[in-house]
Length: 298
Picture 1: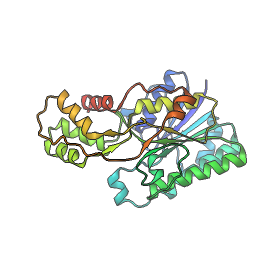
Picture 2 (picture 1 turned 180 degrees about the vertical axis):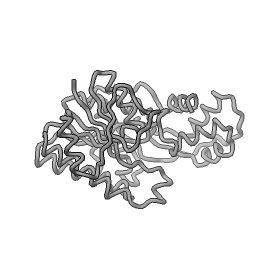
Picture 3 (picture 1 turned 135 degrees about the vertical axis):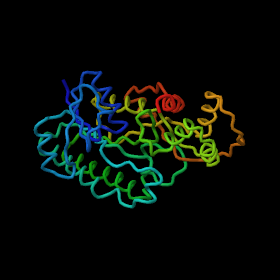
Picture 4 (picture 1 turned 120 degrees about the vertical axis):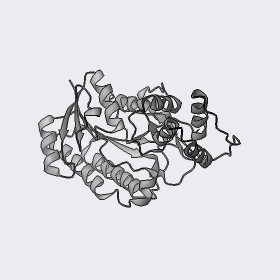
């Protein structure tokens, strides 16, 4: 039985990925900051570990002898938090360095998967692939870029098995309520038409996926023998939140007068061809399904 360590196991991706791995007979160890009984998955062994303490991490890896570490345990700021909080950098970067140094010390064959972000590309307003250069514009994105550069340098020096997965927006019933789609769903649940209309008027568009699809791709990467430097996991398309709003209004028979004259708006979205080809990954759900599931389970 292969052993997987997932940091940030109580987060959306940690929960979904744990379920997939348990279903496929992997032994999963979930590293969490706090105990959360609601998100506790049967079959997962939950452990506490200070990722900023090298001794803690090294003892954990030395004891568990994992085949793979999926490092999801970094802060993921919302749009509002990016404006208020300036530093997502130092402690997150220290955790990566501790994990990589422990892998080098214990077993260089441990696969390490590090999630990057579309924010690493900065203000690009187009379709991007693995070939596009990074241009971070905030401390969170800079941490992701510097983290990627650090692990790639060590990958070359020590012959490690490391991949950065570049993630775009993805949602599910486990999504943190601070993000835009759960906030929108809450407005539908509370019949807050004023908030719904305010979001509609912003005409937001982006690369939105169902989190289950993204986590299935991560599972395929874990299972594969691939040692890619980076790979984009995305929907491969731009989706307007206004289309999601329209769908939910119709599904829930809510009458709200809105101006449906859409203005074309560019934004960044990801080319997922490499993931589809290399991992034989197939997208089975979409953000519209995720929004309906969120409303049903909110």
